[in-house]
Length: 267
Image 1 (cartoon, helix red, strand yellow):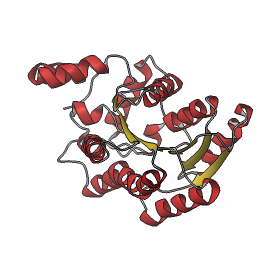
Image 2: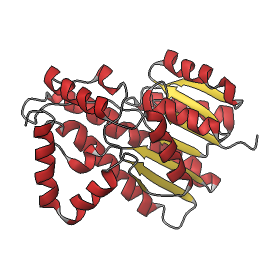
Image 3: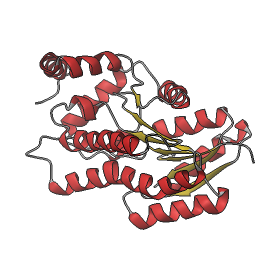
Image 4: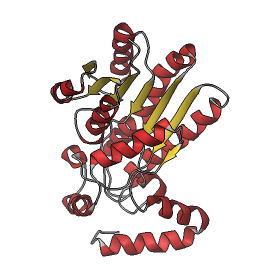
């Protein structure tokens, strides 16, 4: 019962699953939540060799009642939680003018409001305990703001802003906040993506060209969370690009446009 406890949404695949394995490897009890309950169960089954307690939960982070129910299940099983990883998300691409309002609402409801819901229901638990950590998975897209990714980038930028605000509100408390901003790496995010085929093809090429796996990203995130770092940039090159964006924004913009053109993407 001395094991630390972590809840990870979107733990049925991709980075969420990799994070679940990483936390389990370090002895944490893991709650794997996913809208695909079968995938959450698969993650739990694959974790048996780690010899830690694990459970699968079904949750739609886009639904208020579902997130509240997940909160109740966690407290019924564990009486508390030490780390909450708001990871579940979807992808959307297309220009500002052509992206349907329905797709804007879908993306913002899951990628941004899903994180808001997770923070709102578990923050009182962490504050009452007097300790804990909230880890919000954003994206470097929320910093770079590349063309044809407006809905996704806006949602992820919102997660970064939310995390910064939450960090300020919790200053001086024992509850910590981290926000994670990876760039492209191999994942199954395109499975449910709402995007023109050309944009999917561009994203697929960028993922295929990535040199880091989800497991490597997860290991980096875990290390930085344990160190208490707020802004985590786990993919190679992004720390340098973040500095360029911050201190030489016009140079960053020119490089961004050139990179998109080189990748064969539309603008």
